[in-house]
Image 1 (cartoon, rainbow, N blue to C red):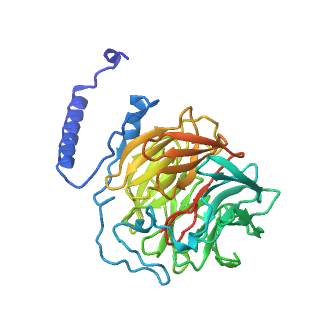
Image 2 (cartoon, helix red, strand yellow):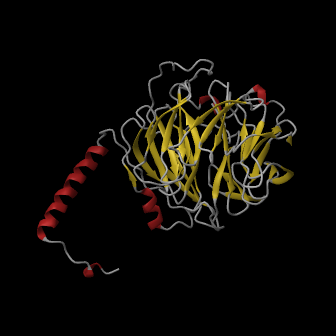
Image 3 (cartoon, one colour):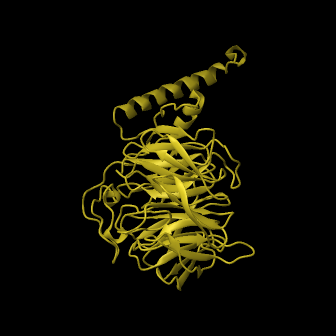
Length: 433
């Protein structure tokens, strides 16, 4: 590239730019001196990633003071019936290695993979990396979801134009499915923090259906008309509200009162995109929102319900999973902006350091791929993700980023690893607390 061909700006413009640059330099010096704002650092350049790509990933909006820093250790006043928060500085403290709930005793060590197009679930033995079982479920299975009491794994069969939706229970002690329960439009499934209700995310219907967590009998329907493609969710540290992502028509978020079951507000993000997964920070003050069009993660102040930062992570940011020690957040970058991507895309895994909000590593999928949804193994050593457009599952070493693959059905989506540490499940593929 020849810089001599680029015309110089007029003198007045050059002067303004110089002043702006000097001001920015002063700001950077102040930042380095500890003014309380942080920026995303340049991640290490992994094999197969060009320097230019790494520089692009490093660009991000400043993150305000307090994002990712420890909060007070004062006890959290939770909603009635919700288990107490053991460590207010780390709400994931009970999901660490070795903290399996006795309720999971006897559960087989398995990875359950719902295949959206082949309408079945593949079961993988994580030790041998072999598919040891497969069984048919309802139409368009999207996610495998641990129940609040950890006794059942529910397959959310979204349904399609020709078949109704349903929830198929799996007994984790045998790995076998039971009889499906007819449920309208269950794209995703969550549970209220007190365990008294399941929340069926009826994406096409723009509804949140509160149901009995065992029988799935309908208790109440909450319309979400401003949330097109209501999708994924996470809950406040005290259980009083949840934030749901709105995937379509420019995206955005809604905040839902978990006590009175009503929508509290809608937030448009600064870049109209396609919000996907959402996870709360250790101290409960910030929510991380993966956006497949923005290629990164928005930071949202949950209490004030406002956007406060952005971290660029990679193409098609999609799934979010905390490490077992609560220090990292794994971001699955699906490698495409499309809801119907192609195999061997520019898929990767970004590793965010929770305390600093810096991208520490970028691990590409060798040969290209489409990492989507999954979770971390009980020992924290493996990150299991579906390869949405490659019909495989990725077994990723959380120390090195090395990848192994297992061939599964057509269009695998929200797989879960079981058992997982934690006292109870809030849903999705294992949002454990």
